[in-house]
Amino acid sequence: MKYTSDEQIDTYVNWQKAQNIPIHGGFFIEDLSEVELAPWDWKGGLGAFVNLEGTGGSNDGYVCEIPPGRHLKPQKHLYEEMVFILDGRGATSVWQSNGRKHTFEWHPGSLFAIPLNASYQHFNGQGDAPVKYFGVTNAPFMLNLFHNLDFIFENDFAFTSRFSPEEEDYFSGRGHIWGEHKKRTSVNFVSNTYELQLYEWKERGAGGKHINFDMAGNVMGAHISEFPVGRYKKAHRHGPGAHVVILSGQGYSLLWPEGGNRVRVDWKPRSVVVPPNQWFHQHFNSGAEPARYLALRWNSWRYRFVVLSSDAPNDVSLKQGGTQIEYEDEDREIHEIFEARLARAGARCRMESMVPWCTQRE
Image 1 (cartoon, helix red, strand yellow):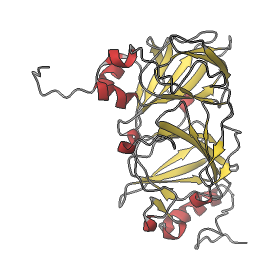
Image 2 (cartoon, rainbow, N blue to C red):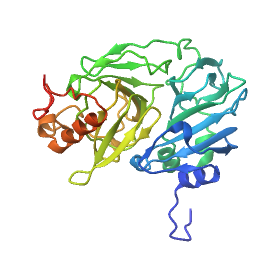
Image 3 (cartoon, rainbow, N blue to C red):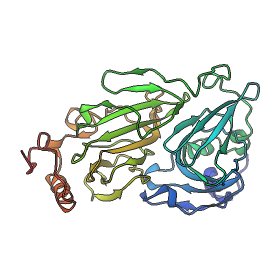
């Protein structure tokens, strides 16, 4: 290969621009259902990219709309993808070139993963309303790694170790829960993220609950976390690309680089924020109901992708080699801001047993 200029090539960006749909950036999207969309010929519906700063170019998100009574084009690609249904009801078919189709139905709050390089197609099952979904992929990494679109989109290799057409319960299996503290499960379809049972993870604080997912044999992973009214989680940091989608509740997050100024984003259901690489971030429930979020990110609990990771545990104190700031070590102003926010809302702080300087004690 001969080079005739100093031009730097970004295969993902070039491919993205060729799609001719909006590209939304920044720190935060207030409501994924309200982002501007445009006709997306490649998908056969409407869409927009969501490239938030916290991804560092490592992964991406997009919103896609399927018009009433319609379906998207069949697709196949050599990058991983997780899909969260925002609005509407429908179905998805997934198949290998030499196997039968697996078809499953979904509705708002459903989550599933597309097996790597398998063919798939999404269908809107409603004749009177559109479907909207949010997808998170590792397309930026994969397109730039191979910088060959034919290899990404026209590759016939079947990853049968990830998805075998003969596995009849692939999208219907309930999975197996394991892990003494960090509960994990391998499932490829979650029907209802809003009501799924979660498990206590006391090390992360606030009386919170969670569950982690390994989906479709991916190196990308997901987890759901929830914490009660009048509480907030401990601050921690990690690598880029964790798309935090708010499922329920009202509150805010603080994000800051070590030694830098804090950025605050106020969220509600369908908001999404991506903490930048190694920025501390902390989530606060200032509303009247438990706050629950879904994180779509790099690194499943089974397959580590260490290039974008850290070996330091995120539920262990910085003082002990982890990436977490314990309540007694946080800037006191953080708690004062929280109490002030609750006071304006007429709500009570419930951190008295956790934070030494909490002023609202029984």
